[in-house]
Image (cartoon, rainbow, N blue to C red; front, side):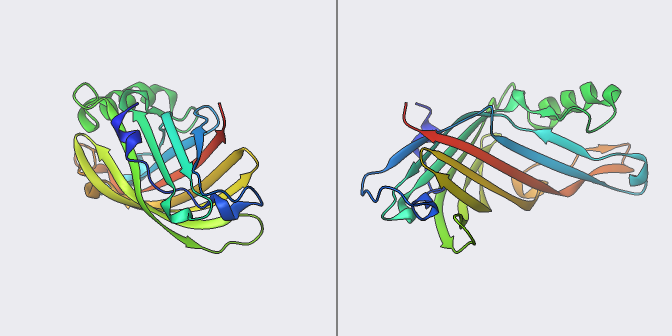
Length: 208
């Protein structure tokens, strides 16, 4: 198993997300890559920002695992792995003629996928809050490994568990420079904004 998944940490808490089995043993959930979405929404800035357009990127989950300890949710964990070369512009989100150029620059200059083929997230702690209904509010802190460097990330999540299924949703405002990425520009007058929004919807199931 990939070493990033060994460092799993906390999406956990699903204990409180539904009536269920109160067990001291951890329950392992495998992330459904096809049903899950991790999206990056990039704005624009600069003198002529009105001439540019926003970028909406999908980051498919290559592999993911959530480990839940129901009697002690803070000991639960989550890890996600992405193939950097698999990131793509969400269809219909910008002019079709621009998509190949945007994806080439993203995979080359920005992510350097030939040198750094993987992006890995491993949670390190979780704070538990309350949420209405059957869900649970979490603040998940972890480490994102990108281009060979590790950066702290903290994401608020709404988590629901129904039997063998688990769903977690959340979004957070972040900054490219905090991840060691200089916002790309076109001619120095139309730039990708340093601030961006990360949106997650993770679906997972327990069992084989």
